[in-house]
Image (tube, rainbow, N blue to C red; front, side):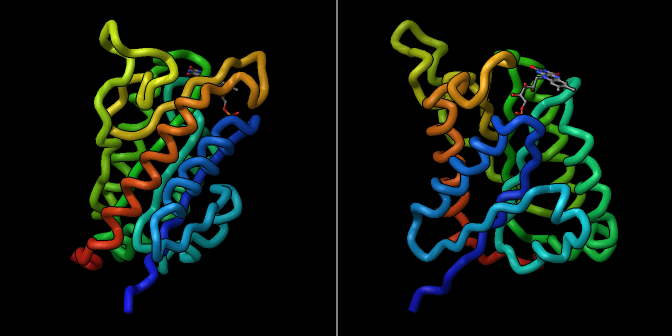
Length: 193
Ligand SMILES: Cc1cc2nc3c(=O)[nH]c(=O)nc-3n(C[C@H](O)[C@H](O)[C@H](O)COP(=O)(O)O)c2cc1C
């Protein structure tokens, strides 16, 4: 009998774009058999981060605000300090995603912040695993990983538009990250190590 594995997608979103990215991550993860996925709003789960203790993998997502994760997401990070002290999430898989209006927008800074957070917790980071989709003459904006990230999934959304300002390719890239983490968590036996 195959054991069901749990993935938690913990995200913030001030205006809904990163929430759409989070849903895509969750759909990708949930497309893998024997994976149970739940989305957690960072502000809510910050009141009791132990709600995430049962997860085998955590995928962190935040909009890029002023070149880093949002203040709400940072509050969640700090709320996890007691778990950090006990290394309660050590050995879980981790991954990250971010969205902003700039094509760069300094999103790498945010992914680096999420990676470092996971490292402090002793987690094991899963990158995107996709080559740059738009860095050659054969590439396009509709390609997976059109923004060329490796550390996690990036999305760009126009600041004067709602969800219609998001690129389908960015949402498919987010789904690919969720799916990758799910495939890894099925065989991951590193819990507590
Ligand atoms: C306070 C604030 C700071 C922002 N800083 C950046 C930034 O550093 N880089 C960038 O590309 N976009 C920046 N933006 C634009 C947002 O990243 C963009 O609108 C994004 O879609 C918001 O995601 P959300 O809808 O999930 O909140 C900023 C927006 C706000 C409100």
